[in-house]
Amino acid sequence: MIYFNPLFLYVIITINLHHRKKTIVLKIFHSINDFESTKKTILTLGTFDGVHVGHKKILERVTQNTENGKHESLVLTFFPHPRMVLHGQSEVKLLNTIDEKIDLLEKIGIQNLIIHPFDETFSKLTAEEFVKTVLVDRFQIQKIIIGHDHRFGRNRTADINDLIAFGQQHDFEVEQISAQEIDDVSISSTKIRNALMEGNMALANDYLGYDYFLTGTVAKGKQLGRTIGFPTANLEIEENYKLIPRNGAYVVKSTINQKTVYGMMNIGYNPTVAGENLSIEIHYFDFDQDIYSQKIAVSILERLRPEQKFSSVDLLKEQLKKDKQTALNHINKRE
Image (cartoon, rainbow, N blue to C red; front, side, top):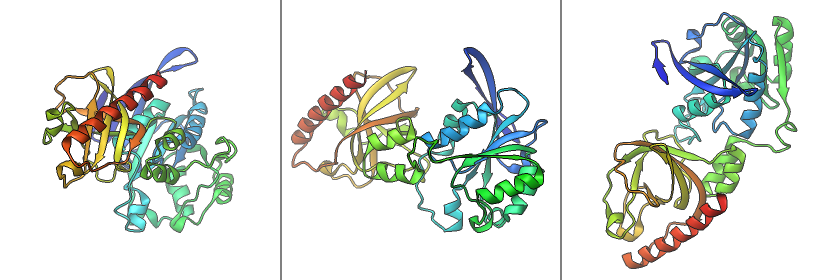
């Protein structure tokens, strides 16, 4: 359930904790200045793009530190992505939209999420200013838990050693998650982005700890697929910063109207029928429902092949039949 409030957003979730159901209220703030708490906080900060396996190690440590109820868990993240602001990289593609990130973070059981607007003014805060005015005065920090390679402050000049020194000065704890604790694998959002741009879904999904997904609205297309026995749902993604994997055909899964459905998806330009614009089209197996204008999430399981141009629509149809059988074989192995 979602409740709107002028200052922040409540997302109520229920998790199973030590075999007892416990309701966690995720409070979402859209500015550091809006945050208030009567308790000291256990926090972490970062962009958390992808909310991947490495991120989860840190986030779960935060929630473990607040199980006694004495403190509240807090995640500080930023939007736009700092690289978009600091380096003018407006073309930076991200693994998650803001809504997708919220969905992933709430499942972990975080109590407070701040999505702070990252701008040049904020980027000019020195490390000392950030610690004193934000962590100490605003967040009432008890402990900060961060990755071993975290850097912060103006020009990212401060590191873990500086943070430990600030902790001693302002009486808060600093806990570092080492590379070894992240299964001796240096998992990074950049590596996941590269895997997706290569179409390597196995590697990307392994690093993420879940199947990479696209969220969008089903729109009407040219309806050419219907004429050859492969009707498709055309996915329109509003956020232009969302990373779309490499062009090609994929095996996919969605939950539609509380039912799991599998299918195959094409990302590309439909060269066989002289397509001009990039499109994302999903053909669901054994599915016949009107889902136009419905918002859906499409989990990408495996890449079948690159996009191809066929000399005729009949040859395209034959290839789609082969793709379907390959996809069904993959799905059967998963179940």
